[in-house]
Image 1 (cartoon, helix red, strand yellow):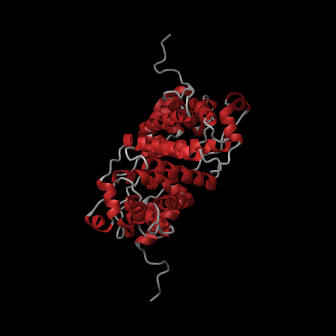
Image 2: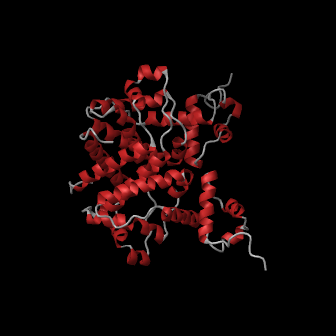
Image 3: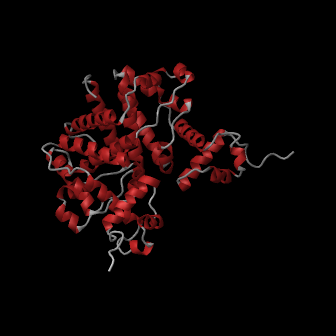
Amino acid sequence: MARPKTPLLSAERIADGAIELADRTGDVQMTQLARHLGVAPSSLYSHVSGRAEVIDLARLRMLERMEPLGPAHDWREAVADLLRRLTTLYATHRRILPLLAATAMTCDRSLAVYEPMFAALIDGGFRRDQLRLVVAMVEFQAFGLAQGLPAPAMSDHIRETLPAYTASVDHSRYDLATATEFSVAMVIGGLEAIRTHPGGP
Amino acid sequence: MARPKTPLLSAERIADGAIELADRTGDVQMTQLARHLGVAPSSLYSHVSGRAEVIDLARLRMLERMEPLGPAHDWREAVADLLRRLTTLYATHRRILPLLAATAMTCDRSLAVYEPMFAALIDGGFRRDQLRLVVAMVEFQAFGLAQGLPAPAMSDHIRETLPAYTASVDHSRYDLATATEFSVAMVIGGLEAIRTHPGGP
């Protein structure tokens, strides 16, 4: 009996196909995904419940490809590691970001990737009610850094009328690596300030 | 002679229509925009060059509706004001955010809105090469805050296996106002730390 020409369909293969499709087109629709994988749409539904689950599985595959966050000796190290790794991951898959942002993270295994981070923040003395806020701020920075900023506008008129903006552009060193390290320093410095003022937000 | 039933088309009316359309549908295409405004597509092109200009004009209208950033006495005040105002503005128009992120800001009048912020940062002692980075970090936070985070997942299995994440959810006070003030404190504390270490990133 001949071996099948394509590997058997699995949740992993569907998720990988969704990442490829999003990287290429910026969207994941079930019909297009089935065509991309060379299967009938009905075959997809024997593995996943629909589009939201596919996107959640794609996030899991991405997070599991990231270098794992081990137990951290220090919350600063945990925050810096998470911010740098998420930024690199998201920058590699920019076009899937709007889909991730719009889809709830429900998979236990995705949440487990973040567990060492929550544990490090508790060990580091952050209040329980601050934990989700800290992780949210790190996510916002990683999303923004990965998407970057468009090239700055400049013209003779801008140069004449907006001197402070012009100075910022003339001396700009905006690139992903510089911006990421600036963000790491800002987030850690800011969290340090919040942590040492227990009455803070 | 009868007066026209609809106000005359103008760049402002096109921009306002684009904001309404994006708020409702999450996209702005020229054909849909013409239909929304009750004009022929060709009429749009006598006022704007195309979709990118429409989105840039929509951003200008949004920024000009924001309470203006006056000359700041202090960079901390300027950063806090910009972060709070952008967050409120973006939260009101969540669905246009991906369009703004994907479209270069080229309009002088939009850039002028940010000028007091750049000036306050220079007065506050930030290096010229740090200015765009500071504004970028504020934008990333405002974008993220406005979009928010989906409701956290929870289950018996998560409760048993992810204690630190579970603690974060059980004590979560995530809402826009709390998250915004946490972000303001983090950004200002972090920038203060960077500013007082001139060798920093």
